[in-house]
Amino acid sequence: MIEDCQIIYDLAEEGMDKSITHLEREFQKIRAGKASPDMLEGVLVDYYGVKTLINQTANITSPDPRQIIIQPWDKSVIGAIEKAIMSANLGFTPKNEGEVLRITIPAVTEERRKELVKQAKTESENTKVGIRNARRSANDEAKKLEKEGIPEDDVKKLQDDIQKQTDDYIEKIDKLFEAKEKDIMTI
Image: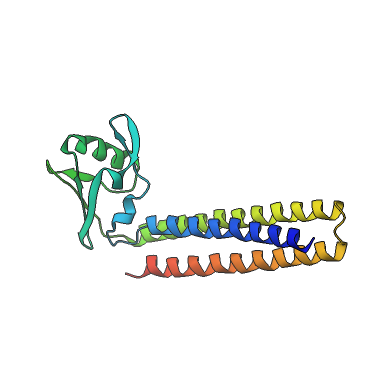
């Protein structure tokens, strides 16, 4: 019976960990003015009829804080890569130089920084919803255990543990957001 409670607790923790990992990946995509190959993560290129991640079609480097260079392994797909970057609506335009695409990252204005903070805040709030959904699912499973005959005290303790876990993860999200906000607003 105690094992069932532990399994539910572990499943809730796993779901919450996945939410945090997703938030960290989303935060990497929110740029604060410094060029990084991570900015193109998730961009899908139509690679011979198959949607393929951009980093699987080209070498992506950042030789300085204001540039990203994309060098396709197959020169014939440079147009498809350019089109994919444009349609991803990342806020910058690649310059096709024949064999490479060059992206110059514009300096971030105060207004744009505030927009990026809002974007980060939205991602944080969405992650909190994911954490709460994991809590709700775990609590539903705990209630099922009670119906199956596990003592009410054990179920109540499990629900209290899940709530404490939820509070810890919400706090972790707030700390990640504060760090990202500071990073974005630092000129």
